[in-house]
Image 1 (spheres, rainbow, N blue to C red):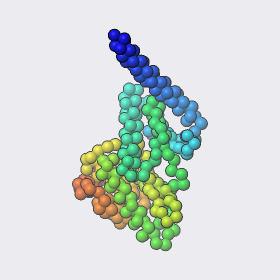
Image 2 (image 1 turned 135 degrees about the vertical axis):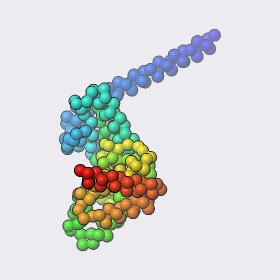
Image 3 (image 1 turned 45 degrees about the vertical axis):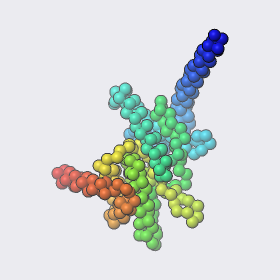
Image 4 (image 1 turned 180 degrees about the horizontal axis):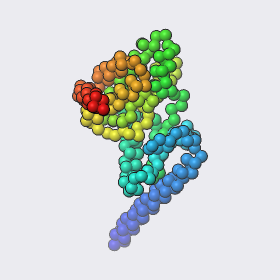
Length: 263
């Protein structure tokens, strides 16, 4: 009988301990959420878009970029909260999936789903692929070879990303950073700004992703049609699922041309 009471006491103690732990976790989460607005008030605001504000700060002693999705007053509060939460989750999931696959993307230091803030590694000392292409076009003597190597590298990275079923949603050369490595080590391309990303295995979605990049690439970098074709050839050679994706890309291009003709 004594043993039964002792066992019951152990169960009660365990349940009490579990409740206390959950309460402590809730309190910690609430304290973190309360601390985030104060933290952001001291951070440097870099830019504000339609969906989010982007800050620069020091977090845990590291240079950090904080992305804050703010409420949209024109949406119903319940709908806005659901959409904002879902997009934050999708962005975090896409970054983590890329990093697990060996694709360079910022390290995620902390996520607060109550304030919809993502604390990300700042890629210090980097430049955008957009700026690199522009400067190379103007200054380099053997620019064609260097730009072709860059295009091939980008194609390989995007093939790897799509093979992981990650759709970036906003592929531009401004959302790719060139991180300089040590001497004799090739520069690393880091994908950033996964705010419109999601997970999909559909070739149609991957084809649209490439189409978005193509439109942005050719409008930002005039007379680079051959360079973009190099990128696509590298993508096709590197992806296990490229044939269906390239076929869908051609279909999306055709639809785009038809819309342009109709106006």
